[in-house]
Image (tube, rainbow, N blue to C red; front, side, top):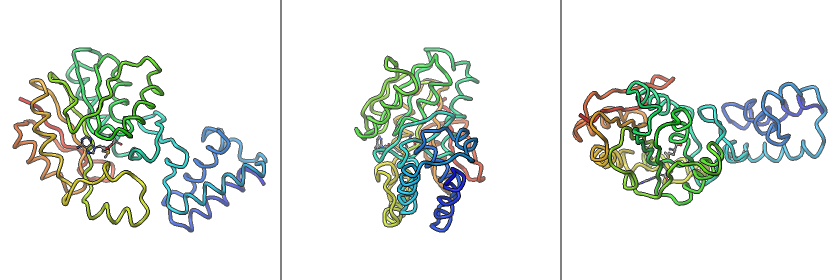
Length: 285
Ligand SMILES: C[S@@+](CC[C@H](N)C(=O)[O-])C[C@H]1O[C@@H](n2cnc3c(N)ncnc32)[C@H](O)[C@@H]1O
């Protein structure tokens, strides 16, 4: 059987089972089995696929059919141009979260701080580290700290810090509730906190979601953590420092009001590719 035929068989099975992107999923799984890049996989379409590789591929397709995320199966997720290690200890980084990284970099560049150690930045609720580590890669001069209250997630974050920056990296990765681990004098705080309504997380779990509940559950309305984040960030940011928060659907009005109440000014909402308010940004006066 050729690689092309295997890919078509796998994507056909996935297409019937329900994932939104059957061909992409099949390509990622087969590339993983062959240890190929996706580009190399596409170039190798006419080549023969050894029978044992086909069996391995089909085993992974079955896991995907039963609802497991591709990223958990292949232990990898591409985010902001980098390959992040992921497993069940962390949320799978979402494409829309790249917006948080893009805007954080823009804020640092506009303030002339993307290359200066004077810019102390903190990414709270770091999970895999996809947000904070991506910012630090783009702005190598800044002093970046990341924190989370899941020790499991912090282990994954440390793996990614080594992957992106090498063994002797200087990224601070700490345990801490909300912003407890962040120092004062910050130029920037980023956070993608859990913001899914608890009842919806129940439904996700019933449907087979394996992502950590701690990474998703934002309480009854999904908004439980925002007031504390806003208050703590206000205390720890410098004059003119920025707070950038990812939010869920229909939460922008509430979160904007929470930031205003905490004292933030120059509030700005940013929409994602689907036209949904996805970020709330504020400045400490
Ligand atoms: C939505 S995930 C975001 C992970 C990552 N930043 C991303 O964008 O993919 C939220 C993270 O917050 C952590 N978390 C939940 N409650 C927390 C709290 N009270 N203090 C600190 N971290 C918390 C979870 O362990 C999880 O890793």
